[in-house]
Length: 292
Image (cartoon, rainbow, N blue to C red; front, side):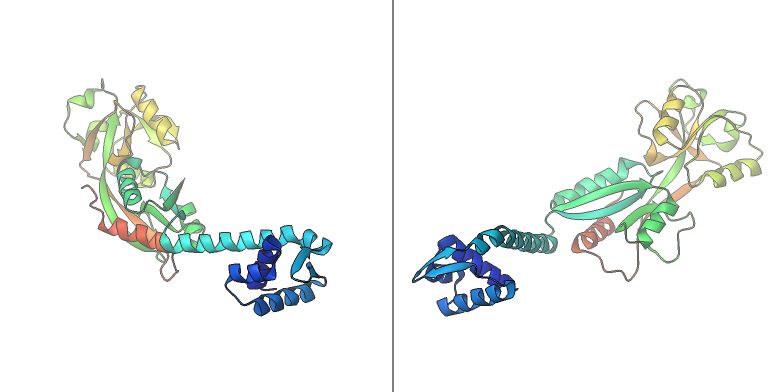
């Protein structure tokens, strides 16, 4: 059963006249009649009763008509999806973002991308680095934004986007508010809030140990919003990437001696075909003027 046969049968059912149906389908009447006879032979029954030039739907035809109409609607919807895909209309892109990356810079980029490609729908999901890599390999994600310094799998392509410093965050009434920058030694024996989800946590703690800087963790959490709220409440300071600080009122100062910087990159799977929408997002990320 071919789509053109279904289309001819539906036109005949609407007009109840083979001549009018042939005109509506832009074919000759013999071609339309032959196609309908072919579909009737395949289905094993007559769709129409012929009464001279007049035709009527048979009981068999009335039973099958809703199913033939459903097939035609599905085919039309499939064609519309294919057209939208090519034209970047209502096309989804599945973007994974490492959970420790703040929205400050990414939101500006995504807003700019949306203005240029209003038909592309970006679905953002947060996850740790290991989860993002697994989902990229399984093709559950189209691309991911992550910290490339933290042992990124060599099987991925990484396009550097921007760098950001680690800063020390604390409430407005903290003694460090008078400083322009904070050295690691300034934090010795200072109570702090431990960001358990930080991918550079072990490296930071190792640096503290190497400089004999002892920190007392009063609060630990994997959630960035809880960490910032506890810092604002005066529980202690926290190390954070500068673009991850989102809570109004929190103060931040650059961490120096040592300075810690991470590189944020866009990761894709080399050699894997990507949709036009995904390719557009990769191209936009390459051309975007990232701050810093």
